[in-house]
Each structure stands twice: as C-alpha cells, then as structure tokens.
Length: 293
Length: 287
Image (tube, chains in turn brown, orange):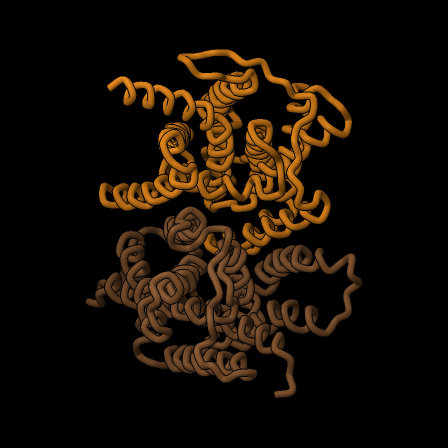
C-alpha cells in the first residue's frame, strides 16, 4: 500500500470513535440512558485484552472474546444496580465507574504495569507491512456492523419499544412491557460492544498506559454525538467526522503547524470542543442532523 | 486494639480536616443544584479558578496568604455569576432540559479548563511564603491553614444556614426552587435571587479551591479531580439539603482518610465511589 502507516492509525482511531458514538446514540438517543462511563467499558476491554494476551499468554481471539465478556459483565452488574435510578444518578454513577477503572489501571501494577505501560500488543493478523491495513479493515467491518444495526434499530419494533421507554417509562410499564429488563439487556449489550472496540483498540495503541483511559474519551464521544445529532442513527458518524476527524486527521496530518505551537493543538482542540458543545446545545440542540425532522 | 483505636482517631481527625474544603464545595454545588435543578459540572472550574486567583495574588503580587483569600473568593463568585448570566440563564430561557444542561455544563467546563490550561500551562503552582505553624493534636500534626479552613467552613456553613432558613432572600430562594411560577407571581425577582445564589456558590467553590491548593498544589485539573466526589456527596446528601451535604462530605472525608492511612490513596477513592453507587441504590430502595 502506498499510504503511510500513520494514516491507518488515525483512521482506525476515528472508526473506533464512530462506533462508540453510534453505540452512545443507541443508549442515549434511542433509550435515554445517560452513559458517562464510556471510557470505563472501552478501557475494560482495552486493558482486559492486553492483560490476558501479555500477562497470561492467552491467544488473540480468546483474549478478544474474554475481554468483551468482562466489559459486558461489568455493564450488567453496574446496570443492574443503577438503571432504575434517575438520570442524574445514572450519569454520576457511570462517571464514577469509569474513574474506578482508570484508578485500577494505575494501582494494579501486577496486572497492568501501571504508569510504566503494558506492551507491546501485536496486530490481529500478521500481514507484514500490511498489518495496519488488516486491523483497519477489521475495525471498518465492525463499525459498519454497528452502524447497520443502529439504522435498522430505529425502524424496528424493538427500537420503537426502546423509544417508548425513553419518552414515557411509566406508560411503557403500564402496557405490560418489562422496561427495566429491556433497559438492562440493551445497556449490557451496547456497553459490552464498547468493550469489544476497546479490545480492538489495544492493537491500534500497541502500548497501554493509564492516560489512555482518561475521561476525555467519554467527552469526545458525547461532543461528537451532540454535534452530529442524537436522534439520528448516523448522528455519531456525522459528529465524529465534524469534530474528531477534523482535528485528529485533517489538521494533525495535513495542516503544517509551526513546531512551537504543536503542543497547544490538543489543548485548543478540547477547548473548542467545549465551545462547540455549548453553541450546539444553545442554538441547535438536536445537532447537524436534527433539523431534518 | 490500640492500633485500631489510633487508626480510628487518626481517620476521624484527618477526615475532618480533609473534608473541610469538600464541605465548602459540596455546599456551594448543592445550592445551585437546589435552585436550578441541574448538576453544574463547570463548578469544577470555579474551584480551580479560585485556587489560581489566590496563587496569582500570593506569588505574583506577593500578598500574604490570608489576605489573598478574600479577593480570590470574591473573584470566584463573580466568575460563577458570569457563567450563570452568559451560559446557564440563556440556556434555561431556551428551555434546555436537565440532562442537556449537564452536558452543556460539561462543555463550559472543558472550555474554561483548557482555556486556563493555555494561560497557566500544565505546571504545578505552589503558594509562596507559606510556612504554616504546626500544632499537635491527639498525636497528629495540624497546620494553621487546616485550622483556618475548619473555622471558615464552620462560619460559612452557619452563615449559609441562616441565609437559607432565616433571611428573606433565603425564603425567596426556596420559593423559587420549589415553585417558580408561584414565586414569579408573588413578585420575586428571579434574576436577583439567582445571581446572589450563584455568587455565594462561587465564593464557596473558590474557597474550597484555595484550601485544596494550599494543602497540596494548584494546577488546571484541581477542580476536575474533586468534582466527582462533590457531585456524589451532594446527590447522596439529598438535593438542596445543606445538612445532608455536610454529613455526606464529612463521611466521605473520614472514609477516604481511613483507607489512605492503611493503603494507597487511590483505593480510598475507589472504595468511596463504589460505596456511593451502593448508597444511591439503598436510598432508592428506601424511597
């Protein structure tokens, strides 16, 4: 391939964000669950995979499956505890969960090597010079799967059931729907999928350090979804293209920034994310895709 | 047995001292939560900026630490009022829902945090000319700052209690919080009352930042590191319940201090967060 490695590195990261934002669209846009613990599930997959593969010598595919199962189990237990609370409690509890995951990644050095870092993680397919391309294609297929499901879900009876729970849970329960069970199952599966993308991200990163599981991941996903439009299944995709892709791909790779200023780019990026989020919520609360209702 | 009792007294005293800034932040946060009914994540930056104001007065202008407290607290109050007037009030007038308000406050928080990161950089700042006097209390060292913090917390809490339950402004605030339409019909000016509440909340947050900063160091992440605990303490304490926020803050301080005495401080935080999730659950089960 003629394209340099870092292009696939950047594109793979952007695809992971597209998947996370689409999964959040399903959780928040479709069902109304305020998940501020995205990086917790993603991070459990990331570190679960790395630890199994490198510390316990489990092969690639079983590690991927077990790490996803770990994130799914965590989502089930957390969801079982908090999902019938009000949305502010859910928000704070999921945020607390993500903080616990990040703390454990730092303290449990016997598992994660702490801030020294855990590495190095191989590619899923050893294709020599095309290994990055292989990983990128695997993530592309998985992302397309998530997007396809999100688009289908919106029209399916199950999607309407979820929207019904979001808009009026008491009513949905009143007509005999087991709302809590539906919320728990859907939250568990979609958060487990976040863990799956975390496990795949381990190969993108090669080297796992606790700063990877920082809350900025969660907020970048939220900003992308709000900007793109939380009501549309493609809101996450559009939002990531309008925010993360602009900074992490277009500007980082193609805009020449004077050497002295490059260090300010990530800071300015997060500052502008915050500003964009405020402007969108104030002037266009349903995001880019929201107006086409 | 003696080990256990000494651990217990140490956890209690350290916890009380560590909880002092937390109480200030939790009370301020709770006031906004009570009045406007949403979680203001940007309150984290109020705490951070309070600490930075004091550091600037202290190390750039060379003011005595105790003299920096007052202008830093007042400036934090002004910042808090500005966030209300420029961001939150327009949002409320536009009918932004409570969940969206939280996300909006996250946006504001990011904007201020990384804006101040551009200004102050990623360095750690310390207070200059600070050589606290040490006192011995139950076999533990206590600095004069910690005593000042404890006294200030006590004074502010009592003042707030009187403000909320004994003054006409407090009454107007409670009226606004419980039934806005009725309060408006009764001739209460919502902007004046809200501005006052946001100012007081900002002062409390700024003071919390100053005392956290003087106990350790100041950087742009100071408030963010605290806000999660502040939010959990306020939710567990009950919406707008100043006494609840007080009790929950002291409880949180004592638990983290107790665990930090025997293990890594991070385990204290982890235990606290897990405990909070369980308490939320139990509160729900009881309600």
